[in-house]
Length: 176
Image: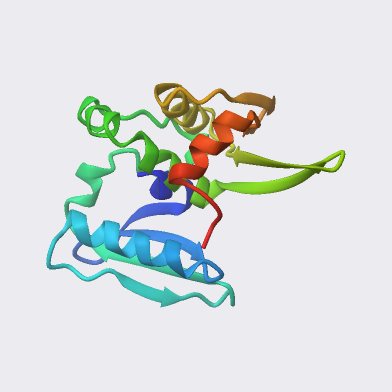
């Protein structure tokens, strides 16, 4: 769900619907995880990985007429220009999967950086999105995990505290 909200979209094909998630080829582990997640939703269906004309991107995709039901947040236009609200059943599913949700969001629209604060190594997590609804979902998941965050700018959420970044390193860590 996190990767979909960040880098994915659902589109109508000739006879079916397709979920596509566009990912950076620099992170083959994330590409593999995305494909495995899609295949877990539809056992027996193979996730396809297509190189894009843009040299460093691939689309990971699967087709199913169920995608609009499973991801009712799809719709015309950009995600930040429409309301993104989880259905009740989606909220219940995510309750036990906050770590995976945060991981997907960081892997799509976030980063983990190691800063040098006056000679001291400092890990930080940043998440950026133009959708206030997606930012709110991210913050809600962090709250559920007991991870403190800050809102340094309109589109950004940051996790700076040492205990919080150590906790995020347990389930996110550096991109691979």
